[in-house]
Image 1 (cartoon, rainbow, N blue to C red):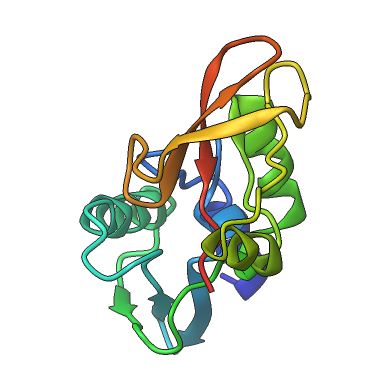
Image 2: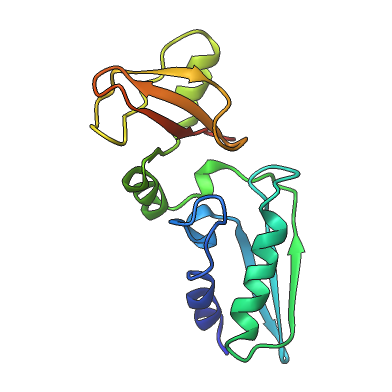
Length: 161
Protein backbone atom coordinates (compact mmCIF):
# COMPACT_ATOMS: atom_id res chain seq x y z
CA UNK A 1 0.00 0.00 0.00
CA UNK A 2 1.36 3.43 -0.95
CA UNK A 3 0.75 6.80 0.67
CA UNK A 4 -1.28 7.86 -2.39
CA UNK A 5 -3.51 4.79 -2.03
CA UNK A 6 -4.05 5.61 1.66
CA UNK A 7 -4.94 9.21 0.77
CA UNK A 8 -7.43 7.96 -1.84
CA UNK A 9 -9.11 5.86 0.86
CA UNK A 10 -9.14 8.80 3.29
CA UNK A 11 -10.80 10.95 0.60
CA UNK A 12 -13.84 8.66 1.07
CA UNK A 13 -14.01 9.23 4.86
CA UNK A 14 -16.42 12.09 5.51
CA UNK A 15 -16.89 14.52 8.35
CA UNK A 16 -19.87 13.20 10.37
CA UNK A 17 -21.18 16.72 10.99
CA UNK A 18 -20.78 17.84 7.35
CA UNK A 19 -21.02 14.63 5.28
CA UNK A 20 -20.37 16.41 1.99
CA UNK A 21 -16.75 17.03 3.10
CA UNK A 22 -14.02 14.46 3.36
CA UNK A 23 -11.53 14.63 6.19
CA UNK A 24 -8.98 15.68 3.54
CA UNK A 25 -11.28 18.52 2.40
CA UNK A 26 -11.49 19.62 6.04
CA UNK A 27 -7.70 19.59 6.33
CA UNK A 28 -7.69 17.58 9.55
CA UNK A 29 -5.32 14.89 8.22
CA UNK A 30 -1.86 16.16 9.13
CA UNK A 31 0.32 13.22 8.14
CA UNK A 32 0.20 9.71 6.71
CA UNK A 33 3.21 7.46 7.28
CA UNK A 34 3.77 3.87 6.27
CA UNK A 35 6.33 1.89 8.25
CA UNK A 36 6.77 -1.82 7.65
CA UNK A 37 3.20 -3.18 7.54
CA UNK A 38 1.69 -0.37 9.64
CA UNK A 39 -0.03 2.90 8.75
CA UNK A 40 0.25 5.91 11.07
CA UNK A 41 -2.17 8.79 10.60
CA UNK A 42 -2.03 12.10 12.47
CA UNK A 43 -5.22 14.15 12.66
CA UNK A 44 -6.01 17.53 14.19
CA UNK A 45 -9.50 18.35 15.49
CA UNK A 46 -11.19 21.47 14.20
CA UNK A 47 -11.29 22.57 17.82
CA UNK A 48 -10.31 20.94 21.12
CA UNK A 49 -13.08 18.70 22.34
CA UNK A 50 -14.73 18.34 18.92
CA UNK A 51 -17.30 15.55 19.44
CA UNK A 52 -16.86 14.25 15.89
CA UNK A 53 -13.24 13.16 16.37
CA UNK A 54 -14.03 9.77 17.94
CA UNK A 55 -16.37 9.01 15.06
CA UNK A 56 -13.77 10.15 12.52
CA UNK A 57 -11.11 7.92 14.10
CA UNK A 58 -13.51 4.96 14.01
CA UNK A 59 -14.39 5.68 10.36
CA UNK A 60 -10.71 5.90 9.37
CA UNK A 61 -10.03 2.55 11.05
CA UNK A 62 -13.03 0.94 9.32
CA UNK A 63 -12.14 2.36 5.89
CA UNK A 64 -8.57 1.08 6.06
CA UNK A 65 -9.45 -2.27 7.67
CA UNK A 66 -12.09 -2.92 4.98
CA UNK A 67 -9.34 -2.52 2.36
CA UNK A 68 -7.06 -5.04 4.01
CA UNK A 69 -4.94 -2.70 6.12
CA UNK A 70 -5.11 -4.13 9.65
CA UNK A 71 -2.35 -2.21 11.43
CA UNK A 72 -3.55 1.39 11.74
CA UNK A 73 -2.53 3.85 14.44
CA UNK A 74 -4.29 7.20 14.66
CA UNK A 75 -2.81 10.01 16.70
CA UNK A 76 -4.52 13.30 17.58
CA UNK A 77 -2.22 16.29 17.23
CA UNK A 78 -3.35 19.48 18.94
CA UNK A 79 -0.45 21.73 18.01
CA UNK A 80 -0.44 23.60 15.80
CA UNK A 81 -4.16 24.16 16.20
CA UNK A 82 -6.37 23.51 13.18
CA UNK A 83 -7.24 26.52 11.05
CA UNK A 84 -9.75 27.03 8.27
CA UNK A 85 -6.71 27.87 6.13
CA UNK A 86 -6.16 24.09 5.99
CA UNK A 87 -9.51 23.48 4.25
CA UNK A 88 -9.17 22.79 0.55
CA UNK A 89 -10.65 25.16 -2.00
CA UNK A 90 -12.66 22.18 -3.26
CA UNK A 91 -13.97 21.69 0.28
CA UNK A 92 -15.04 25.34 0.50
CA UNK A 93 -16.84 24.97 -2.82
CA UNK A 94 -18.60 21.82 -1.57
CA UNK A 95 -19.70 23.70 1.57
CA UNK A 96 -21.33 26.43 -0.51
CA UNK A 97 -23.10 23.89 -2.73
CA UNK A 98 -24.31 22.07 0.41
CA UNK A 99 -25.84 25.27 1.79
CA UNK A 100 -23.17 26.34 4.29
CA UNK A 101 -21.29 29.56 3.64
CA UNK A 102 -17.56 28.76 3.63
CA UNK A 103 -15.16 30.64 5.90
CA UNK A 104 -14.10 34.08 4.82
CA UNK A 105 -10.57 35.30 5.17
CA UNK A 106 -9.32 35.76 8.73
CA UNK A 107 -9.28 39.51 8.11
CA UNK A 108 -13.04 39.51 7.45
CA UNK A 109 -13.79 37.82 10.76
CA UNK A 110 -11.41 40.13 12.65
CA UNK A 111 -13.26 43.12 11.16
CA UNK A 112 -16.48 41.66 12.55
CA UNK A 113 -14.92 41.70 16.01
CA UNK A 114 -14.42 45.45 15.56
CA UNK A 115 -18.09 45.98 14.71
CA UNK A 116 -17.64 46.05 10.94
CA UNK A 117 -20.00 43.99 8.79
CA UNK A 118 -18.89 40.69 7.33
CA UNK A 119 -19.88 40.14 3.71
CA UNK A 120 -21.00 36.53 3.97
CA UNK A 121 -22.52 35.27 0.72
CA UNK A 122 -25.84 33.45 0.98
CA UNK A 123 -25.34 29.89 -0.30
CA UNK A 124 -28.95 29.84 -1.54
CA UNK A 125 -29.27 32.96 -3.71
CA UNK A 126 -25.62 34.19 -3.70
CA UNK A 127 -26.56 37.61 -2.28
CA UNK A 128 -24.12 39.33 0.05
CA UNK A 129 -27.01 41.17 1.71
CA UNK A 130 -26.89 39.00 4.85
CA UNK A 131 -26.77 39.41 8.58
CA UNK A 132 -25.63 37.29 11.49
CA UNK A 133 -28.47 36.17 13.74
CA UNK A 134 -26.24 34.54 16.33
CA UNK A 135 -22.57 33.52 16.55
CA UNK A 136 -23.81 30.06 17.55
CA UNK A 137 -24.93 27.76 14.74
CA UNK A 138 -25.77 24.08 14.45
CA UNK A 139 -22.26 23.17 15.66
CA UNK A 140 -19.62 25.14 17.57
CA UNK A 141 -17.68 25.88 14.38
CA UNK A 142 -20.64 27.61 12.68
CA UNK A 143 -22.63 30.83 13.11
CA UNK A 144 -26.24 31.35 12.04
CA UNK A 145 -26.91 33.95 9.35
CA UNK A 146 -29.99 35.08 7.46
CA UNK A 147 -30.17 36.34 3.90
CA UNK A 148 -32.03 39.64 3.71
CA UNK A 149 -32.93 39.03 0.05
CA UNK A 150 -34.24 35.45 -0.06
CA UNK A 151 -34.96 35.46 3.71
CA UNK A 152 -33.44 32.00 4.19
CA UNK A 153 -31.36 31.22 7.27
CA UNK A 154 -28.03 29.48 6.72
CA UNK A 155 -24.92 28.37 8.56
CA UNK A 156 -21.60 30.15 8.10
CA UNK A 157 -18.46 28.14 8.82
CA UNK A 158 -16.49 30.42 11.14
CA UNK A 159 -12.97 31.34 10.17
CA UNK A 160 -10.67 29.90 12.80
CA UNK A 161 -7.07 30.89 12.90
